[in-house]
Amino acid sequence: MNVATILRRCGAIGAAALLAACASTPPDHFYTLAGGGAPAAAAAPAANPVYIEVMGVVVPAQVRRSQLVVSEGPGRVDLLEQHRWAAPLSDEIGRALSLKVSAELGAIDVYRTPVPAGATTYRISTNVQRFESAPGSYALIDATWSVRQGSTDAVLTCRSVFKETVGPGYEALVAGHRAALDKLGAAIAAGVRSEAAGDVTKC
Image (cartoon, rainbow, N blue to C red):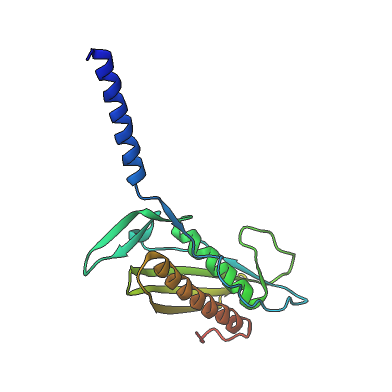
């Protein structure tokens, strides 16, 4: 067997090994916390629309990354390279809250958008203290949030903690976080109603 034949055979073996390696690489999965589920029951549009501003959401540094970060025991977390958020986690949470609060109130989110002169806007700020993911166990969101009417000094500040039991699998884990965010959005919408009624002590 001459050298050229040996090289051709080696090349073919190498290509086959490369194809096999590629075929065995797990595919990437992307998840979102907003949309895709059953549509929320939106409030009827009002003659004078409610304007909200869902500000950028703050999330803990540990989960401020594209990979899902899951708890695997006390003091241990894993980064899942093949399981990622479709957008930065803060954006995913912010969009989910915007959609939920808007649907609950029949409101328009005007963040970074001009509003009509004299319109009242409710500014919503959210600081997520904990965003915990335990596959097959629970999904937890612990957040401090506030609602401020326009540029007034009156502000409603509350803390909400929602823990959802989840089944096995990462789809179930993400569904748990979506359910928790749905409850958080409903709580914030109730806060906007309280602020509009002048009751800034009620969470």
